[in-house]
Length: 167
Image (cartoon, rainbow, N blue to C red):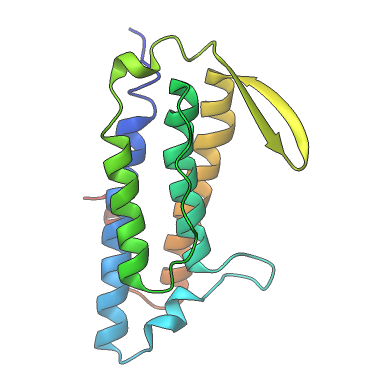
């Protein structure tokens, strides 16, 4: 049995973004319960040279909206990257999930061999759709979703694997 490019991307991005939304809701509630300014969490980072929580969410949603768009040969939606609150990042996630809902399996049929042209590190890169999805978009997406979770867990938000997995 084979898995389609659609099944390997759109439902996965959508499910993980819904779980990220739940993680962020738990963090917002935890900040209120502990009387912590939400900006403490939103601007937190794991290390001085890493991006803060808000930027992690922005990059995760960029990969989630970008990958199926590129695979389907569509223009990638541009977001302003101006989120500063839990409501803002939740809205960005919801907007991305809505964008993902516009794709069908037929939109991504044959995209495993479609050449995807990107600029990475200032260099032009050309990958097949399958290479791009499995070795570029998905690993980057998971890195930023996981880092967002880790930032919050590091700051004492009581999260567990089940929340990360969306259970």
